[in-house]
Length: 217
Length: 217
DNA sequence: GAGCATAGAGAACGAACGTTCTCCATGCAA
DNA sequence: TTGCATGGAGAACGTTCGTTCTCTATGCTC
Image 1 (tube, rainbow over the protein chains, first blue to last red):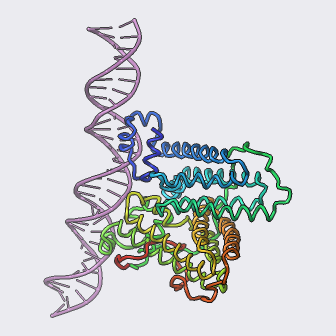
Image 2: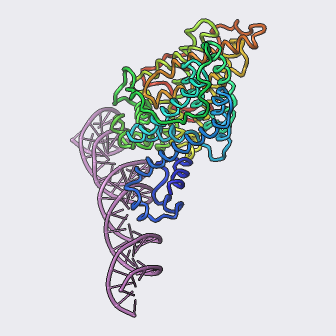
Image 3: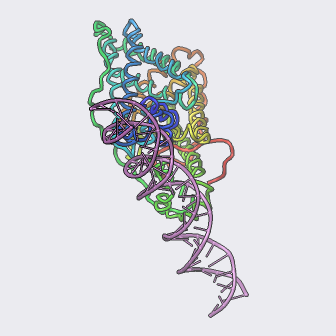
């Protein structure tokens, strides 16, 4: 049920999928669905939670296969490369959900923020384990982020290759720059990703906005 | 009218804005709107086209202010930094539109793809003018892409700083690696997308599609 | 078999949407 | 002033949606 909902929401967008389609695709009656979940919105949130879990596990598993701290960082992009060539790939489900509902559903926005913060925190741990400068972490996160949207819109998986190459350069620069005591390489596989409560950043400063009431362009 | 539509679509999502709200906010009657545009979908496409123009002009203008090829590449991230702190910033309008309607509206998907391809081609020109290895271009594009979604979801502008720092490292690596005859540094301000009017009072950058004939606003 | 709880199919409901239509006020030409 | 074209306000229409309700078939307990 949640799996079916995820498949439909992800492939077509949340608002484009009706409860009736969900019923048809999942085989669960309308009554059954409303017995499990109080509303469509709650299904959306459950789907996001589930997707976060799958992503976290998927990345973690791929990272665990790598042996060196450097390869563990690069494993993220290998994971992305595999994902991007999936026929059903259509970008990051959280970015998509945020774009569609983020400004109209605080819960969706919150889920997306938590998901991204969790990933960024995970990358930061891997960076620390590699003994690289902390500034490397947001750079690698941004690369992963950009690769996902680029691949989604372009419809090709090239972005993973480019992001990986860029990551190699950034990693090498950050490790040679600050290396020093080639730190945390000791802590091998341990650190699992975990959603950390981050700074609940506000929005940015001001900016002018024109209000209503103009004529045709 | 298109400006108002853009503001509403961008800030709340396309499907969350009704024609009635558009009427109220723009001051144009329903009849007037349907006299100008055959449907809401056509308004969406016009808005995207317009947004693409503003983005192209905005980035071009910022790049034109820089003097060295290296600074012209970095100017992209300065432009992003300014944009991200705008109160109304909510990510890239094309990514958002693609996430919401890309799989249900081929025209929207096409506009998004064209917009991204246009930006990537622009970056490639700047990279060539800097005499750097061509592989640098997609890396810088991905950084810009990732910065936009990261900033949107996080609600802070930090991503622009991180992306800029990463870009510096990648640029330096690409220019020292392949440099050779330190090529195109000759072409100073020349290239770029029609560096025209600055960021017109409107909202942030983005929007719209580029090429192939659609009707005028 | 009788009685009953469960749950599925799908009708029903109220709201919202995109689009079209009706009505009316306005401004201009003669 | 009369006649007419223009365009706004907003009602109307047909559809879709999320959610609830009705009806009925099924299977279980005694």
